Image (cartoon, rainbow, N blue to C red):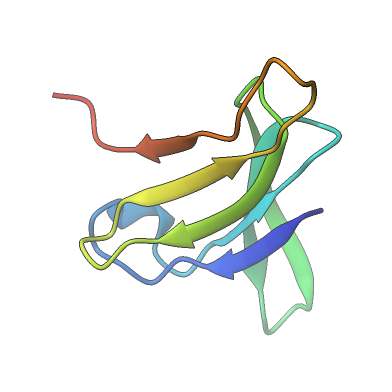
Length: 86
C-alpha cells in the first residue's frame, strides 16, 4: 500500500464514501466498501493499472489522479487521470 483516501465526490457517484488504496507492488488501485456498523469489508475491487502507484489524490472536480513510480532508469513518473467514459 502506498496511499489510502476516502473518496467523497459525486463525480464517480458509486464510489462516494469508498476507500481507494493505491499499491506499488500490485500495480493496482483497490476500491473497498467498508461497513462501519459491522466493522467489515462488504465489497472489494482490484483495478489493474499496470504501473506502480506511488500516490493517489482526489482533484477538486472529483477526478482521481495517480502518480506512478519510476521502476527503471528509462521510465519517468507520470500522472494518470481517472475520468468518466464519454
